[in-house]
Length: 246
Image (spheres, rainbow, N blue to C red):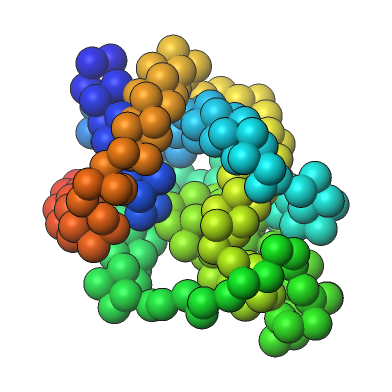
């Protein structure tokens, strides 16, 4: 539990300053003894706790628009329910291999450093999204499906979508946590109903992520995102290789 609290604190910090905390928490849950599919369900308890705290923080700064729930979070929740249904049917080895591949893919994306377009909009503008309103809705459904199944690197995907719809990344981060909170609810329910959630370990991890998120705000000022991104990439590559070799 001490290991999970420490890793949760680090992951919470990473989620604030760069994203990608699940690339550390998921393999750690596996390495401390949880079956991969149970680790996948348990990790979401911590994410729900962290996103709850993050939403309140963004709300106090006037950056949360509740219309986002209808526009983005509900389509994502539908996708997440479908993704979780697939996730509970996967075997442990299959999920472990899928997780390792997803981690390496996200690490490569981080190394390549895909830049988000600099936007100044305060709302999601479907007219600016390449595929229009229907395309924006489908993008959130697909994002939710991926999040319900794997979750790793989801924040980067959401930020890419909102940037494509003209929203600035400050509000994009706020929208990201609203979307994640809403779609984690049905996902956790599905994993828990299948016996794939360890509530005690998930809560321990969650307390760590909340503490780490608070520290991450200060670290972001002191070190900047470039430094923390290098730390994430190194850790992710090592853990992914460890998963692949079993």
